[in-house]
Length: 224
Image 1 (cartoon, rainbow, N blue to C red):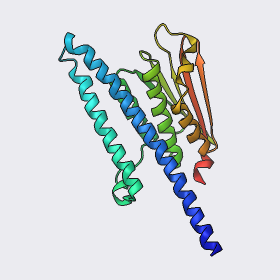
Image 2 (image 1 turned 90 degrees about the vertical axis):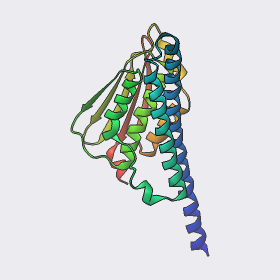
Image 3 (image 1 turned 180 degrees about the horizontal axis):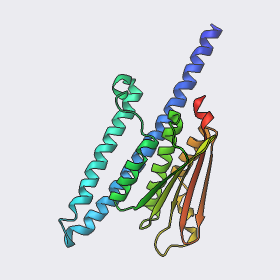
């Protein structure tokens, strides 16, 4: 009876941890997609009277982002229902998808440069997903709090770790205190993700209103 109770306790703890992970995923997905849709809807509204033809592009972006959000939410809800077979056909995003993410952000009006330093290599799945979500969340924050601006994503590999940083130049004419407005669930979620793998997260404002997010993840942690 004692062993059975311990087993049930371990199962409950595992379920709670999994649900917390799913909640973080849902937050990242919904926050990113909704922020993009709001920005693009506003751009379309501004163009409707002046140039209706140009308004089509941001409206298409709203449609595409909405479809992406619905697909991602369906996948995460499928995970909750235990639909493993279908989910296996839709892998989680990772570092290989950063170029596509950067291209998407550029298409909706946030110019982003991606730099990779060191010898790229396959990462443990959890670390790979964490890197992607940090970049996604950081760029979403830039879009919400610092646009119009430009951003630079740097991914660096070394023998013991992978490091990712997202730096923006700040809102045109902004002040050095702009980073204070970005403290919220997004940065808290990043810190929790990085903490799961024994990594570190640093955030800092820069003169002129820019902001930098830097995460370092030890590679051995993702293999445990």
